Amino acid sequence: MDDLYRDHILDHYKDPRNYGPMDDPDVSAEGQNPLCGDQLSIDLKVHDGTIADIRFHGRGCAISQAATSMLTEMVMGRPVDEVAALGREDIVEEVGIPLSPVRLKCALLGLGTLKVALHRHLGTPLPEGWAGMDEVDWR
Amino acid sequence: MSPFDVHAVRADFPIFARQVNGYPLAYLDSASTAQKPRAVIDSMVQLYETSYANVHRGVYTLGQESTALYEAARETVRAFLGASSTREIIFTRDATEALNLVAYSYGRANLGPGDVIVSTELEHHSNLVPWQVLARETGATLRFIHIDDHGSLMLEELDEIAAAGNVKLLAVVDQSNSLGTRVPVRTLADWVHGQGGVLVVDGAQSAPHRPIDVGALGADFFAFSGHKLCGPSGAGGLYGRRELLEAMPPFLTGGEMIRSVRLERTSWNELPWKFEAGTPAIAEVIGMGAAIEYLTRIGLDAIHEHEAGITRYCLERLDEVPGVRVLGPEDPAERGGVVSFTLEGVHPHDVAEILDSVAVCVRAGHHCTQPVMERLGVPATTRASFYLYTLPEEIDRLVEGLHRVRRTFRL
Ligand SMILES: Cc1ncc(COP(=O)(O)O)c(C=O)c1O
Image 1 (cartoon, rainbow over the protein chains, first blue to last red):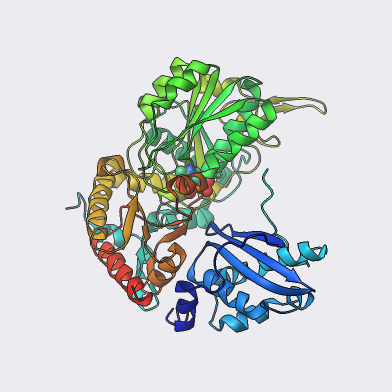
Image 2: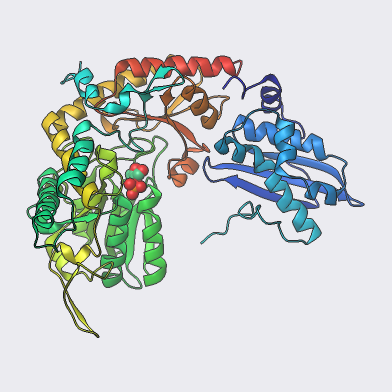
């Protein structure tokens, strides 16, 4: 447990980077974690195939908020196709704490939501294994 | 403080010998599911070891014994709910299936375009989604009684709903699982009967914790889950008023629920078996009967009194923790043994994780009541819920745990 709430996690949780809504984003996506009822929005500006700006906002636990904050720093300025290809292990490594299966879902909420936005921007389908990260289909 | 010896009760529950992370278990999640006393576990083991066979079929000794035990559980449930006949007691998998049975079987036969189904903003998804689906399929309209800032139903809205007319059914929770709010069901029963409609009560959170009398409550249907009252998961029940059940078509069809089958048509079995298609959860139903007998021996009034004491103590102690906001009714008399709260600056999920490190088990999330969370403006809460085995010391550990959460988050 003390492993989980390390300084860097608490730092990103209390002082999230690139946080808040964005005016006029080129593309956006919303993600939710049905287990906790958490919601996350990610907005992007894309120039010449690279992520020119990224911002997020929403409500969530320390792990999901910190992981998303770290993710925004990790992808800022990088090519869209490269970021769209990021895997779970990339974010898990960045977060750098042991994650139970439940908390893994929290840690991946940001990346899943970002993938929805990027594939929407690229006009490509969401890769297998990330389905369900897509927005809610109200029945 | 307690009307019975809580330590003696705890000795009946083998799980309390367990430690988690080096601490004895403080199980504060009974609203989700309750722990099981030895008597329940033994009843199932004994069945499997000595009498198990399918019910209502075998002419041989085992089949007769299993059937007798299974049907004895029905009588136990009948007495527990104050129903007049065992024909009014249908075994289901849980409250969810019981509510779906009413929605499918009663709902599809009795509702149509222009009819109104009334429910509330307080419901568990299990007593909300089936009515949404029913409304969509029949063309009926769904209307809601909303809650105020403390999670109490705004009964003044009933007048407007009555004025619009055509109310055919009211589905309401007896006690909220996410806030603990106790609902004035009797008042609602009189109201809906005055409208010519029927009352469906979700008793998942009330039946385990206080005496129930479906007649006094005015319930036409009453759904509950065995696993929340110390029985095994997989068995629950539905009480339905006999005339209503008689007139309803079956829910699931197949074996057991038939009287006579020709290739092209079938006549239904009599109540209650008309609604119990297939091989039932035999051991689970028998275990549920043992659980009800166990609770009845201690006394539902006594259990209720014990939980009321624990709840008051919890509310008092939480008051000491900076940043805690308790949701739900302000008057403890309007609250069952459930305390939902938020801790400023920490997400409930993180609260629950840190509490688990000291073996305090609480639930974090929306508790299958997303509309309640939305109405109260929180994404989720931390919920502590109590039962006959809850000790005041466990509340102390919850409070110490919350101080630990605050330290971890440098608050
Ligand atoms: C108020 C209420 N209704 C219905 C249910 C559904 O119970 P089950 O999942 O046992 O069907 C629950 C369980 O949490 C509940 O608390």
